[in-house]
Amino acid sequence: MNAFSPLDPSLLSQRLQHPGKKISLVLDTDTYNEVDDQFALAYALRSPEAIELEAIYAAPFHNSRSSGPEEGMELSYNEILNVLDRLGESKDDHQIFKGSKCYLPAADQPVDSPAARDLVARAMARSPEDAPLYVAAIGAITNIASALLMEPKIRERIVILWLGGHARINPSTNEFNLKQDVWAAQIVFDCGVPLIWFPCNGMASHLSTTLAELEKDLKGRSAIGDYLVDIVKDYHPDHFAWGKVIWDLAPIAWLVNPGWVPSVIASSPILTDDMTWELDPNRHSVCETYLIHRNGVFTDVFKKLAKA
Image (cartoon, rainbow, N blue to C red):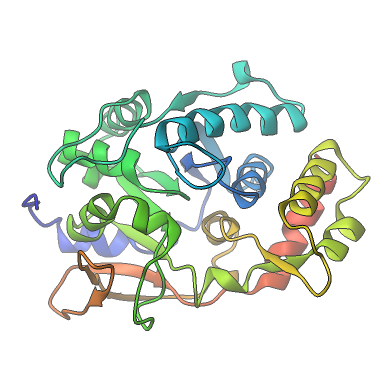
């Protein structure tokens, strides 16, 4: 594992607090992986009071919806364009970058990609004294870990918001975003970068909705609303007593209103190779979210996307 020098403790402490004002954001998303990234991307674009979305990165993924991480990244890139179209926006309106075609081949080997290079350039254009660039990662965190390996100095200029892994109380953290690239996740937890962590089971798992709710509050109100309802409906064949967790809304919701997403400052957990947590109170700090108030989040999401 790479040896990263620790950040200044006062800088780290400051960066682990909610900024309390509008921020600049890049969004790293495996948009075609399922149906929640589309909600998060649309929500970020429709929250201009809190977020200036500077760039969008396509992240790799591999499941039944792709033949491998490269195709997953390409499908995600195309889905970003599809979501923009449903929002009445175009590729020319946004800076969109393709990400890695594979996961990290080793703990000290970044994967070059347009997304990783853009993050390095975008972060290094700031000084450590400037307001940081926020990086919301809602997939395998390969692109971001690669950028950290390529230029460790970006740690002083960014704040990462990552939805991945399960809360530390779980006996295993074998979660989709994390398990795809354990090396990348280890880098993010070990390198000392300011990290706002959004665990899945035990936190983001509260963000459940139903098809009936979506049809009532989004269907027929906007092109993006119709699209989101349709992809959720098509995601599962039996809708009786069925709900769908829209996991990836969590980091965007924290930026919009931290009162919906309470958190604590705690030592960064150690991610083992077998995807369990080890705890060391002497490690650097991270901000760990532990609950999300789904009613407030979905009220804001539905109101904004119904008008999109």
